[in-house]
Image (cartoon, rainbow, N blue to C red; front, top):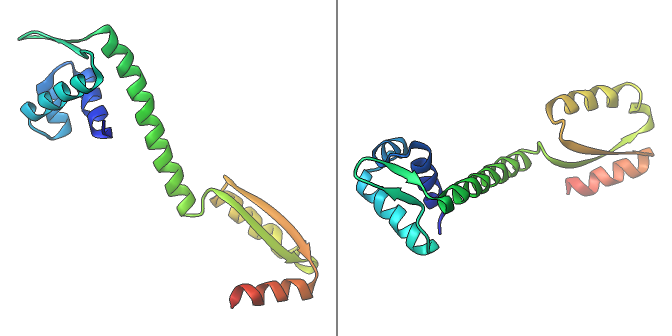
Length: 141
């Protein structure tokens, strides 16, 4: 089963109409109907009761609808968190600083960073000049 099958199913379940669901998905109605039939065959149970004029969720279809919605929400959340992490908006940042910067430079930088990236965990380490310079030199190479 692919995510698109869940998206197709949810569109039909929300619209309770294959034509409107197909329009919403920007696909033709016959392939949508076929995809839903394939999904039902794969699942081994009927999702919809269809007549010529109406479409209704079965009891199993209703349960599947609720759970499929949760799955797609989780997928969307995973995408969002991945994007935020790739942009540096999530995770942890370790900062080393010299004591002379602790009272004037560091607070302003931290405040600006916290405003921009509130979800990043900060780990602060005060170091002496020699260690900080040596660490910066190692990272630069």
